[in-house]
Image 1 (cartoon, rainbow, N blue to C red):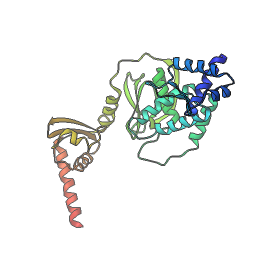
Image 2: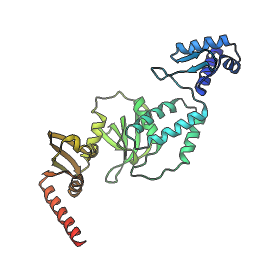
Image 3: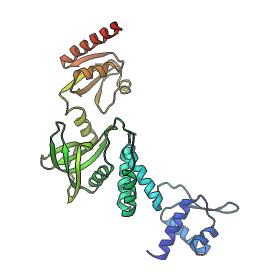
Image 4: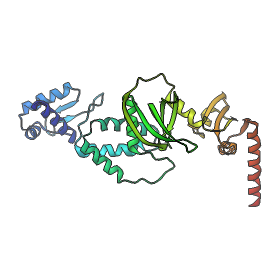
Length: 317
């Protein structure tokens, strides 16, 4: 790195640390003349950094807000703090935040020196989070799979199926999808020659290879995962006519687990899957809407029996 380049980077670092610097202050810090500072400021502007200069008392150089976000320079402590925060955010439940945090963490991890990566890992391993309804996923697994998706690298891992069977998988990962409670990987299963959805909390010994693959034509990952987790695993598929408009119905039902289709302005078809029809009936009645159970015929019978039990419970009180 040339002396000029190094000085410009140091200048940028200083401008990011304080709102305003005078020319003489910067010159003293960098051991150059104020004329050199003016030239270095022009170099930064040429790279897209909006460096502002004001005259008079209280004036000086400051880093302004540009149209695009330029690269940031981070010292060791800042890099570690951001990486730790991103790991926590990646395991969170805020819609959209987890995916964005994971993408950013993958970028940061790519350029972070090993000594800082070790610090981040040490902090992560010594930190506990209170349990929630979410299935916790190891941060290293998330990061490994995110980078494999980005770099198009095949991955091998052990996987525990829904029935508890332990299998070994060799996949071409396409996308990670977070539902709020769980993380899923959509990938091409090489041995089974088909697309598959995998829960990250059921994975073991996730190991990326050096085998790069050419991405295949694939379905939309969000739709594929939603279909896989809301329909495929369950033995019962139900249809319920909800006597309310789709927009109103969507405020009471989680679109990750049901499919809502507008029949008309005041009627919505709800489709849901579960191992228990009783669960579907209770879930729908709990919404407070007037309903008509359509399919399967047994759903109406299960709902009636549930209503009778509730009436007996109320009467016994």
